[in-house]
Amino acid sequence: MFLEEIVSNPLTENSEIECKSKLDRNNVIGWLKTFAGFANADGGTIYVGVEDKTNKLIGFDRSAADSERNYFNNQVNEHITPRPPYKISFIRYHIREQERFVLQIRVDSSPIKPVIVKFDGIPSIFMRREGFTGGATYEEIINMCIHSQSASFDTILSDKIYKPDDYQTLREFHRQHTEGKVLTDKALASLGFFNEEGILANGAVLFGDRYTEHKTDVQCSVFSGFTKGSERIVSVNRFRLDENDYR
Image 1 (cartoon, rainbow, N blue to C red):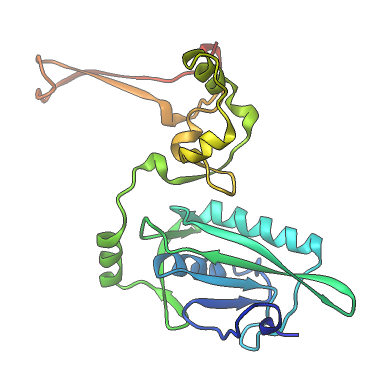
Image 2: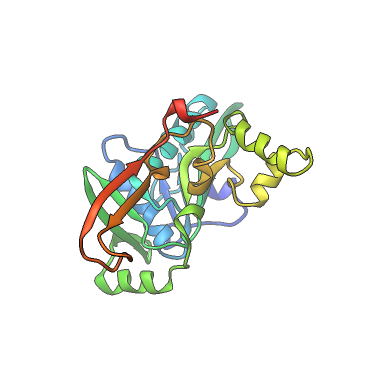
């Protein structure tokens, strides 16, 4: 069987489509750059479980398909920044009465560019062009920066998954200040707290119960003059909440 038999339109590998028989664990950068290249261009779709060039279906059983999806998400979280919008779906088909799956990874053009792949400590920027992915040129990087949407750090997606039980303090605070109203997951999602796949925004992470990472640190500087225009700083103090500070 071929990919054309399980999707709505006949496909050939081009600037918006790429096929991978599997996610090569020995060459992660090889497919991560395709993902980033799509995000830096106009978006595209990666099919995993489909033979390159021929579009012949290889597929996975249900367990292996889940494993591929989880591995993909983990590698994106570890090596891609900022995280572009994307969605993974399973396309199911049967061959010889056996259930098989192909991963369809739809990558949107990132609203914040350039999307960077950081692998082995080396950051790289890739661009998709005419069915091939390669390093972005200086002119392409400048153009990406110019046309990138302005967005604050807080609204960019993090690598954390929303778990309702981690936000009891926030819910209680909301209840106390809204005459007992319940803060629902639907309300949080409508505010951009997390996306449809449950990925938290950076700002939302800071509201988690017992959050103690460095993003909530406060730094206070004391200047020798009456204003901070003075060049001499008397002292700098940094403050951080620890577990004993939570009520």
